[in-house]
Length: 86
Image 1 (cartoon, rainbow, N blue to C red):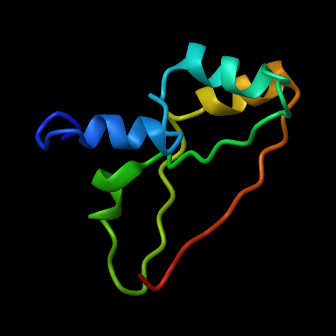
Image 2 (image 1 turned 180 degrees about the vertical axis):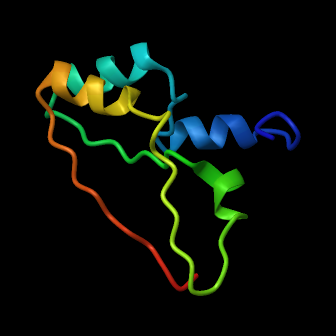
Image 3 (image 1 turned 90 degrees about the vertical axis):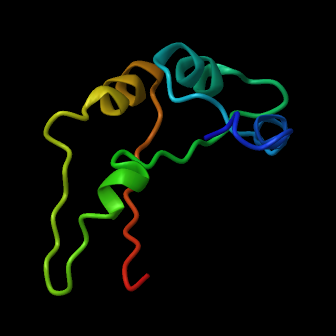
């Protein structure tokens, strides 16, 4: 998707988006210049948001524990948030 529209990838990078790979997450969380940064992760992403049904709440995290390991290794806190009614 990021390469379909011209300059879309560059715009995302200018806004501070990074690829969701382990090395980049660790670098982002351990940098101290000028201050330590926060990141926002959407473990299920857009594909799992399409599985939403009225009155049913399902959380798919059983195979997505890598971000928890990264947080423990870097000493960062995890702040869970829930969005609903969208």
